[in-house]
Length: 279
Image (tube, rainbow, N blue to C red):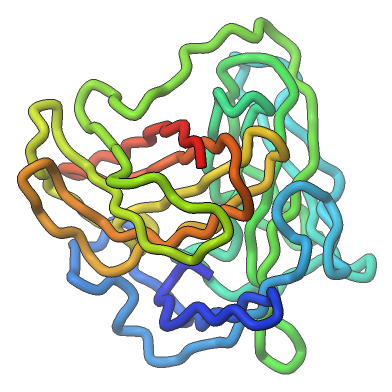
């Protein structure tokens, strides 16, 4: 639901998106329209209720979730995604990956975005070191290919605990090199475009490259419910007096407090920035 978006159609509360098959390599040179070279599109329907707050939705189940036992120690994250008891193995690529994994502490002060691999048994796993203990949400985002060669997009989530001290340095919207800000506050329940400004420490435009086939990967979480919100970059960056602007499509489901995690590539380096937002 994030690569080569041609349209977003909302009908009877059901989101239908066109996903272009394939995608731009992560380290590819910038272009004015990432993903535009793909020639085949697949219709993907969003699974109702699959907003990352439950391990089951639409017949899909996130199970066997495991995190490193203790903070500060290198370990593994692992899990399965099944439907009808069988591993899901046929995916439609989204932002150059079959599946995106988010490991987020329940207070939204720790965020990790990973791309695990799936073995022959259907188990997904990847390397992970967490900086602090606490209760974490393990959230998977994917589009599974259906027998009619269409797709079903879902986000599933489950909790797991990690031992260790809970104190952590909370990232901000300014990491000492790059600053992220929203031009306006999103309105609840409305499909809208908002401006995302990326600048250097002096407020100047930056040299942006693509990350996962687009110019920004943005994921938002509700502080009250943990619900994950889809955000889609619209077009390419435009330089302005106060930074580099990207248009972002967003629809917060309701008023409340959210945290936006923005990931951008600037001068070849990936930056992850945290923006608390009250809608």
